[in-house]
Structure formats: C-alpha cells, structure tokens
Length: 168
Image 1 (tube, rainbow, N blue to C red):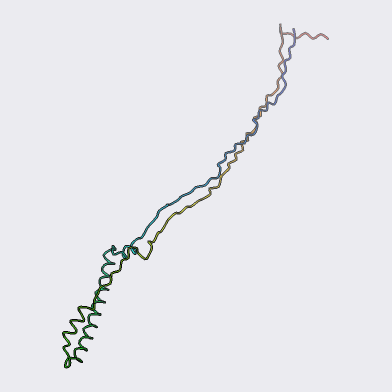
Image 2 (cartoon, rainbow, N blue to C red):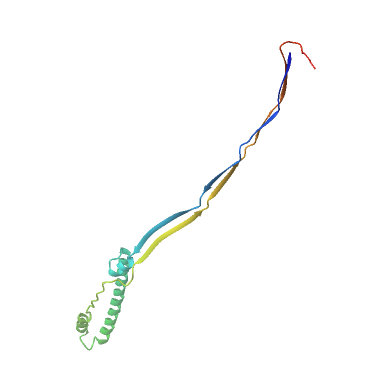
C-alpha cells in the first residue's frame, strides 16, 4: 500500500489594467455677426431746392412767399397813399402812379439747374467679432487591481488496500 500525498502551493493571482488617459479638446474659434452694408441717401433738401420737394416744404415755401408778398403790397399801398395825399392838389397823381406801376415790375429770370446742398448719405456697416475660448477635458481611468487568493492544499490518500505498510 502506498501513501500518496498531493500538495498544491497557495497562489496569489494579480490582474491589473494599465491606467489610461482620455483627452478631448475643443479648439478656440471666432464667432462674428455683421450688419450691412446699407446706404441711406436723403435727397429731400436738394429736391426742395429744385422745387420737387414734398408737400411740407411746398407749404412752408408758399406761405413764406405769400406773407412776404402781402407785406410788400401793404408797404406799397401805404407809400402810394402817402404820395397821393401829398400830391393830390398839384398834379394828376393817379395817372402817374398807374404809369409807374406798369413799368416798374420787370421780372428777373434766373436759371439755376443744380441744387446748392448735397444729399445726406449715411452708410451702416457693423461688425462684431467674439473669441470663444477652447476647452480641454482630461479624464484619467484608473482601475483597481484584481487580486485572487488561491489557497494551497494537501491531499493524502492510500492506494491499494486499507493497511499502511511502513517499511523503514
């Protein structure tokens, strides 16, 4: 009969995964917004000077001209009345005044084809530039080691028979 002894040593199994790093990067960039180009041309004043203006300008011009003509007419009537009162007894004043009035108004003709003022020109162009900072995300991935402990063992068994034969 034989004594059989099987033994296995204890073991420590260590499994590990190397640490990793993950980097994600977003680059900085520009953002911009713009408005334009737009051009506004205001020709009201040159057109008013040419007589092609709007109704408000026409109304103002005609009312000022009418007022001036009325004031000049009143002043002329007052002068003629004063002259008539002074000269009424000596001469034929009415005929003289009529003759003077018929020859005194020779109209002036002025030709002006260009306006005196330039049109107002307004340009709009707006540009806004913004810098957006970049961003970097760094993530470390560290995993814990896996440790497995396998116990050792000893197995004792007898082969062929039930008696132990000890020989020395």
